[in-house]
Image 1 (tube, rainbow, N blue to C red):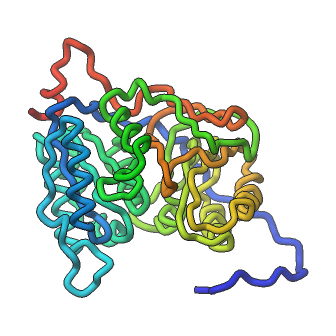
Image 2 (tube, rainbow, N blue to C red; image 1 turned 60 degrees about the vertical axis):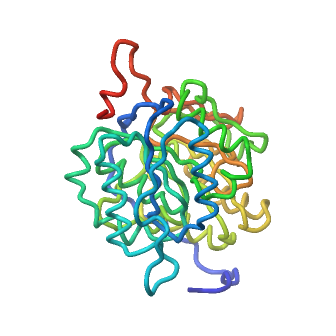
Length: 347
């Protein structure tokens, strides 16, 4: 991997970007039921090793919300030879699958990101997972691969939000509170904005929310089950510790692969550790501006010091001029009063 960006030199005018077969626009996904006090949630670790003290603290927060918390058997494992993984691939996959298939579990919350989902996602029995009713999945960063898989293979809307062992979840009150309200009162969290939100490319657009961590989305290209493109999407993008030239490479890969063909709009999140913000803005404008879609700068989700929970798979209106992303339906389904919610969750 190149360690430094190449010098800019004079050369021939680049040819037009390759054309890709058109892909159908995204459709809204099935929204799982919202949570209620007394619901059981499972904590899993699909990626990197989890700090025990942070895990305990994060589970305590969930319990303070009136939830029953079950920690999956292998959450505190570490791979016997690869210390960057939270246990063996098969064990991490088994924990996630068991939680999703358990009819008493209403939500699956990832303990942390890091790296590892790419190694275990194809070990899941997707035919079996499709037999379970939809439930909430929460996570960000490396969990982007699970969000994509659940969208493509299960048709289930998910939450790009903080994890139980994430520093922001444990130290930033607004981050935890926004997740809590999204889980329990989703109708109260349909308007997403932040003090840092601003216009990068003006305009308004409607689409289905999709996306996540930019480098993980780039790594998804060419893998089994990867979507042809994000046509019709309000694409949400953020990342951490990727320098501007690396972000350029990531976005260029997404462009060249056809992933960004037909994108309706882009909502950018945090770019912590990615260098000077003005340099990051320049890269985003250079790579995303030619799409002809509105682009919103720094909506305040992802790896930043404070983070919104962003639903994926729901229709939304992006207003880059006003710095707002408005969900056209709540993130989670609120059953009608005469429908027993617990029956829907398998209780």
